[in-house]
Image 1 (cartoon, rainbow, N blue to C red):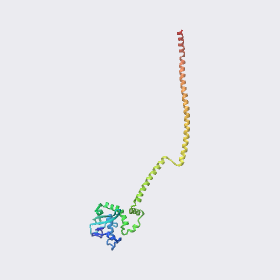
Image 2: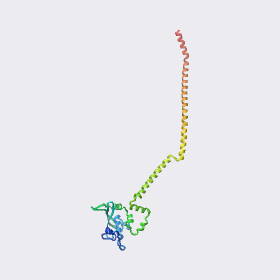
Image 3: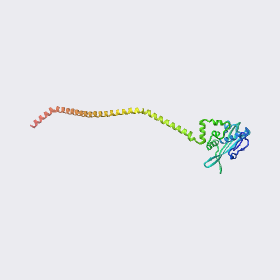
Length: 282
Protein backbone atom coordinates (compact mmCIF):
# COMPACT_ATOMS: atom_id res chain seq x y z
CA UNK A 1 0.00 0.00 0.00
CA UNK A 2 1.20 3.53 -0.84
CA UNK A 3 -0.18 6.77 0.59
CA UNK A 4 0.71 10.41 0.75
CA UNK A 5 -1.03 13.50 2.13
CA UNK A 6 -3.53 11.49 4.19
CA UNK A 7 -4.02 12.93 7.67
CA UNK A 8 -0.68 12.65 9.57
CA UNK A 9 1.12 11.00 6.62
CA UNK A 10 2.33 14.02 4.70
CA UNK A 11 5.27 12.39 2.91
CA UNK A 12 4.82 9.33 0.63
CA UNK A 13 4.80 6.09 2.58
CA UNK A 14 4.80 2.45 1.45
CA UNK A 15 3.71 -0.50 3.57
CA UNK A 16 4.56 -3.99 2.28
CA UNK A 17 1.79 -6.12 3.72
CA UNK A 18 3.07 -9.14 1.79
CA UNK A 19 6.27 -9.04 3.84
CA UNK A 20 4.41 -8.41 7.09
CA UNK A 21 2.15 -11.42 6.55
CA UNK A 22 4.96 -13.87 5.83
CA UNK A 23 4.86 -15.06 9.46
CA UNK A 24 1.07 -15.26 9.42
CA UNK A 25 0.25 -12.55 11.98
CA UNK A 26 1.37 -8.96 12.50
CA UNK A 27 0.36 -6.01 14.62
CA UNK A 28 0.26 -2.24 14.23
CA UNK A 29 1.58 -0.57 17.40
CA UNK A 30 2.27 3.01 18.40
CA UNK A 31 1.20 5.82 20.71
CA UNK A 32 -2.11 7.60 20.37
CA UNK A 33 -2.17 9.85 17.29
CA UNK A 34 0.75 8.11 15.58
CA UNK A 35 -1.43 7.13 12.59
CA UNK A 36 -2.36 3.49 13.26
CA UNK A 37 -6.02 3.95 12.29
CA UNK A 38 -4.97 6.08 9.33
CA UNK A 39 -3.44 3.00 7.72
CA UNK A 40 -6.84 1.32 7.89
CA UNK A 41 -8.45 4.53 6.63
CA UNK A 42 -6.11 4.43 3.63
CA UNK A 43 -7.32 0.93 2.74
CA UNK A 44 -11.02 1.89 2.81
CA UNK A 45 -10.28 5.16 1.01
CA UNK A 46 -8.50 3.31 -1.79
CA UNK A 47 -11.17 0.62 -2.06
CA UNK A 48 -14.34 2.71 -1.69
CA UNK A 49 -13.25 6.36 -1.97
CA UNK A 50 -14.39 7.07 1.61
CA UNK A 51 -13.11 7.00 5.17
CA UNK A 52 -15.50 5.50 7.71
CA UNK A 53 -14.86 8.01 10.48
CA UNK A 54 -14.70 11.13 8.25
CA UNK A 55 -17.65 13.50 7.84
CA UNK A 56 -19.35 12.74 4.52
CA UNK A 57 -16.61 10.17 3.95
CA UNK A 58 -13.87 12.59 2.85
CA UNK A 59 -13.98 15.85 4.81
CA UNK A 60 -10.83 16.60 6.80
CA UNK A 61 -8.87 13.56 5.58
CA UNK A 62 -6.11 15.54 3.81
CA UNK A 63 -3.02 16.73 5.66
CA UNK A 64 -3.51 20.45 6.36
CA UNK A 65 -0.15 21.31 4.78
CA UNK A 66 -0.87 19.49 1.50
CA UNK A 67 -3.16 20.17 -1.44
CA UNK A 68 -3.12 16.64 -2.89
CA UNK A 69 -3.70 13.19 -1.48
CA UNK A 70 -3.00 9.82 -3.07
CA UNK A 71 -3.56 6.20 -2.04
CA UNK A 72 -2.85 2.93 -3.80
CA UNK A 73 -3.74 -0.46 -2.38
CA UNK A 74 -2.75 -3.81 -3.87
CA UNK A 75 -4.70 -6.91 -2.87
CA UNK A 76 -4.97 -10.52 -3.91
CA UNK A 77 -8.01 -12.71 -4.56
CA UNK A 78 -8.15 -16.46 -5.00
CA UNK A 79 -9.78 -17.96 -8.07
CA UNK A 80 -10.05 -21.31 -9.83
CA UNK A 81 -6.96 -20.37 -11.84
CA UNK A 82 -5.00 -19.40 -8.72
CA UNK A 83 -4.35 -16.08 -6.95
CA UNK A 84 -4.99 -12.88 -8.88
CA UNK A 85 -3.67 -9.46 -7.98
CA UNK A 86 -5.39 -6.10 -8.32
CA UNK A 87 -4.51 -2.52 -7.43
CA UNK A 88 -6.84 0.36 -6.66
CA UNK A 89 -5.53 3.89 -7.04
CA UNK A 90 -7.19 7.14 -6.06
CA UNK A 91 -6.03 10.74 -6.03
CA UNK A 92 -7.72 13.70 -4.36
CA UNK A 93 -7.28 17.47 -4.61
CA UNK A 94 -8.19 20.08 -2.03
CA UNK A 95 -11.44 21.87 -2.91
CA UNK A 96 -11.16 24.50 -0.17
CA UNK A 97 -11.24 24.18 3.58
CA UNK A 98 -11.74 20.55 4.58
CA UNK A 99 -13.40 19.37 1.36
CA UNK A 100 -11.61 17.34 -1.31
CA UNK A 101 -12.41 16.18 -4.83
CA UNK A 102 -11.56 12.78 -6.28
CA UNK A 103 -9.54 13.60 -9.39
CA UNK A 104 -8.31 10.13 -10.33
CA UNK A 105 -9.60 6.59 -9.77
CA UNK A 106 -8.33 3.38 -11.35
CA UNK A 107 -8.98 -0.33 -10.87
CA UNK A 108 -6.05 -2.29 -12.30
CA UNK A 109 -5.50 -6.00 -12.84
CA UNK A 110 -1.85 -7.06 -12.37
CA UNK A 111 -0.74 -9.86 -14.68
CA UNK A 112 2.54 -11.41 -15.75
CA UNK A 113 2.29 -9.43 -18.98
CA UNK A 114 1.85 -6.10 -17.20
CA UNK A 115 -1.10 -4.02 -16.04
CA UNK A 116 -4.66 -3.83 -17.38
CA UNK A 117 -6.88 -0.89 -16.41
CA UNK A 118 -10.34 -2.33 -15.87
CA UNK A 119 -12.05 0.89 -14.74
CA UNK A 120 -10.97 4.53 -14.54
CA UNK A 121 -14.06 6.38 -13.32
CA UNK A 122 -15.03 6.95 -9.69
CA UNK A 123 -18.33 5.05 -9.76
CA UNK A 124 -17.00 2.30 -12.02
CA UNK A 125 -13.96 1.70 -9.78
CA UNK A 126 -16.12 1.42 -6.66
CA UNK A 127 -18.51 -0.90 -8.49
CA UNK A 128 -15.59 -3.11 -9.61
CA UNK A 129 -14.34 -3.36 -6.01
CA UNK A 130 -17.80 -4.39 -4.80
CA UNK A 131 -18.17 -6.94 -7.59
CA UNK A 132 -14.70 -8.47 -7.28
CA UNK A 133 -14.54 -8.82 -3.49
CA UNK A 134 -18.31 -9.20 -3.06
CA UNK A 135 -18.55 -6.62 -0.25
CA UNK A 136 -20.01 -3.16 -0.01
CA UNK A 137 -18.27 -0.62 2.22
CA UNK A 138 -20.61 -1.29 5.16
CA UNK A 139 -19.83 -5.01 4.92
CA UNK A 140 -16.09 -4.35 4.51
CA UNK A 141 -15.93 -2.16 7.62
CA UNK A 142 -17.93 -4.72 9.60
CA UNK A 143 -16.17 -7.89 8.54
CA UNK A 144 -12.65 -6.91 7.40
CA UNK A 145 -11.60 -3.48 8.67
CA UNK A 146 -13.52 -2.72 11.85
CA UNK A 147 -13.05 0.99 12.80
CA UNK A 148 -12.54 2.11 16.38
CA UNK A 149 -15.75 2.18 18.39
CA UNK A 150 -17.63 0.09 15.80
CA UNK A 151 -17.31 -3.30 17.46
CA UNK A 152 -20.46 -2.80 19.56
CA UNK A 153 -22.33 -1.75 16.42
CA UNK A 154 -21.13 -4.90 14.69
CA UNK A 155 -22.45 -7.04 17.55
CA UNK A 156 -25.80 -5.22 17.63
CA UNK A 157 -26.65 -5.50 13.93
CA UNK A 158 -30.35 -5.98 13.31
CA UNK A 159 -31.61 -9.20 11.81
CA UNK A 160 -32.24 -7.77 8.33
CA UNK A 161 -28.84 -6.01 8.23
CA UNK A 162 -27.02 -9.15 9.43
CA UNK A 163 -28.90 -11.30 6.91
CA UNK A 164 -28.10 -9.00 3.99
CA UNK A 165 -24.43 -8.79 4.98
CA UNK A 166 -24.16 -12.59 5.19
CA UNK A 167 -25.86 -12.86 1.82
CA UNK A 168 -23.21 -10.66 0.25
CA UNK A 169 -20.36 -12.32 2.13
CA UNK A 170 -21.30 -15.82 1.00
CA UNK A 171 -23.06 -14.94 -2.28
CA UNK A 172 -26.42 -16.23 -1.04
CA UNK A 173 -28.59 -13.55 -2.66
CA UNK A 174 -30.45 -16.13 -4.74
CA UNK A 175 -31.53 -17.84 -1.50
CA UNK A 176 -32.30 -14.55 0.27
CA UNK A 177 -33.53 -11.33 -1.31
CA UNK A 178 -33.89 -12.79 -4.81
CA UNK A 179 -35.90 -15.74 -3.49
CA UNK A 180 -38.04 -13.38 -1.41
CA UNK A 181 -38.70 -11.23 -4.50
CA UNK A 182 -39.58 -14.31 -6.53
CA UNK A 183 -41.96 -15.53 -3.82
CA UNK A 184 -43.48 -12.05 -3.55
CA UNK A 185 -44.15 -12.02 -7.30
CA UNK A 186 -45.65 -15.52 -7.07
CA UNK A 187 -47.91 -14.44 -4.19
CA UNK A 188 -49.07 -11.38 -6.18
CA UNK A 189 -49.77 -13.53 -9.26
CA UNK A 190 -51.75 -16.01 -7.14
CA UNK A 191 -53.73 -13.17 -5.54
CA UNK A 192 -54.60 -11.80 -8.99
CA UNK A 193 -55.64 -15.27 -10.22
CA UNK A 194 -57.72 -15.80 -7.07
CA UNK A 195 -59.52 -12.47 -7.52
CA UNK A 196 -60.26 -13.33 -11.15
CA UNK A 197 -61.71 -16.70 -10.13
CA UNK A 198 -63.78 -15.08 -7.38
CA UNK A 199 -65.14 -12.53 -9.87
CA UNK A 200 -65.97 -15.32 -12.32
CA UNK A 201 -67.63 -17.32 -9.55
CA UNK A 202 -69.77 -14.32 -8.57
CA UNK A 203 -70.89 -14.08 -12.20
CA UNK A 204 -71.80 -17.76 -12.26
CA UNK A 205 -73.58 -17.67 -8.91
CA UNK A 206 -73.54 -20.13 -6.03
CA UNK A 207 -71.81 -23.43 -6.85
CA UNK A 208 -72.06 -25.20 -3.49
CA UNK A 209 -73.06 -28.86 -3.14
CA UNK A 210 -76.51 -27.90 -1.86
CA UNK A 211 -77.04 -25.50 -4.75
CA UNK A 212 -75.87 -28.16 -7.22
CA UNK A 213 -78.28 -30.74 -5.72
CA UNK A 214 -81.13 -28.22 -5.89
CA UNK A 215 -80.30 -27.47 -9.52
CA UNK A 216 -80.20 -31.19 -10.34
CA UNK A 217 -83.68 -31.63 -8.84
CA UNK A 218 -84.94 -28.69 -10.84
CA UNK A 219 -83.29 -30.11 -13.94
CA UNK A 220 -85.10 -33.42 -13.48
CA UNK A 221 -88.38 -31.55 -12.99
CA UNK A 222 -87.70 -29.50 -16.10
CA UNK A 223 -86.94 -32.69 -18.10
CA UNK A 224 -90.20 -34.25 -16.88
CA UNK A 225 -92.15 -31.09 -17.72
CA UNK A 226 -90.50 -30.98 -21.12
CA UNK A 227 -91.52 -34.59 -21.81
CA UNK A 228 -95.09 -33.87 -20.71
CA UNK A 229 -95.17 -30.75 -22.85
CA UNK A 230 -93.82 -32.73 -25.80
CA UNK A 231 -96.60 -35.31 -25.50
CA UNK A 232 -99.18 -32.55 -25.14
CA UNK A 233 -97.73 -30.86 -28.20
CA UNK A 234 -97.99 -34.08 -30.21
CA UNK A 235 -101.64 -34.49 -29.12
CA UNK A 236 -102.48 -30.91 -30.01
CA UNK A 237 -100.68 -31.32 -33.34
CA UNK A 238 -102.80 -34.39 -34.14
CA UNK A 239 -105.97 -32.53 -33.19
CA UNK A 240 -104.91 -29.56 -35.28
CA UNK A 241 -104.24 -31.84 -38.23
CA UNK A 242 -107.70 -33.43 -37.84
CA UNK A 243 -109.34 -30.04 -37.49
CA UNK A 244 -107.46 -28.83 -40.54
CA UNK A 245 -108.83 -31.76 -42.58
CA UNK A 246 -112.32 -31.05 -41.25
CA UNK A 247 -111.94 -27.40 -42.24
CA UNK A 248 -110.88 -28.44 -45.71
CA UNK A 249 -113.94 -30.77 -46.00
CA UNK A 250 -116.26 -28.01 -44.79
CA UNK A 251 -114.81 -25.63 -47.34
CA UNK A 252 -115.15 -28.27 -50.07
CA UNK A 253 -118.76 -28.91 -49.03
CA UNK A 254 -119.53 -25.23 -49.12
CA UNK A 255 -117.99 -24.90 -52.57
CA UNK A 256 -119.97 -27.88 -53.86
CA UNK A 257 -123.18 -26.54 -52.32
CA UNK A 258 -122.57 -23.22 -54.05
CA UNK A 259 -122.02 -24.96 -57.36
CA UNK A 260 -125.17 -27.02 -56.77
CA UNK A 261 -127.16 -23.86 -56.13
CA UNK A 262 -125.88 -22.34 -59.35
CA UNK A 263 -126.83 -25.47 -61.30
CA UNK A 264 -130.28 -25.50 -59.70
CA UNK A 265 -130.82 -21.92 -60.84
CA UNK A 266 -130.10 -23.02 -64.42
CA UNK A 267 -132.58 -25.92 -64.30
CA UNK A 268 -135.68 -24.02 -65.81
CA UNK A 269 -133.70 -22.72 -68.75
CA UNK A 270 -132.23 -26.19 -69.31
CA UNK A 271 -135.76 -27.70 -69.28
CA UNK A 272 -136.94 -25.09 -71.83
CA UNK A 273 -133.99 -25.87 -74.07
CA UNK A 274 -134.69 -29.59 -73.81
CA UNK A 275 -138.33 -28.94 -74.79
CA UNK A 276 -137.24 -26.90 -77.81
CA UNK A 277 -134.81 -29.64 -78.71
CA UNK A 278 -137.53 -32.27 -78.65
CA UNK A 279 -139.81 -30.08 -80.82
CA UNK A 280 -136.98 -29.54 -83.28
CA UNK A 281 -136.32 -33.23 -83.43
CA UNK A 282 -140.04 -33.93 -84.06
